[in-house]
Length: 105
Image (cartoon, rainbow, N blue to C red; front, top):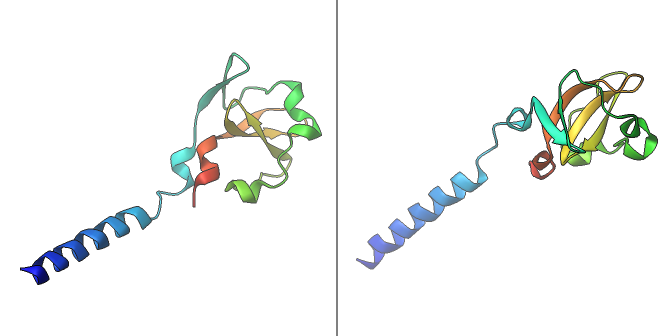
């Protein structure tokens, strides 16, 4: 009986560990089409406010936040709890990721 209980416990722990360590569906699950920041609704194709074009809002360490490399002529910024890729010249929003991507492994 004791051996059976120990085996059952081992199976339960192995199953729980496998579920916990299962790889995420990738960063695609964090993609957004729209978000709210500064009391304004934004979507891909909209222009971000000029404030987010300043160097203070340019995320240079995008790798540490699990973000893909910014496309040429764009940079990552943080708006309303989300990571937003915007054009350097015009501020046009091209990609949006939920801020939870930071914790993605």
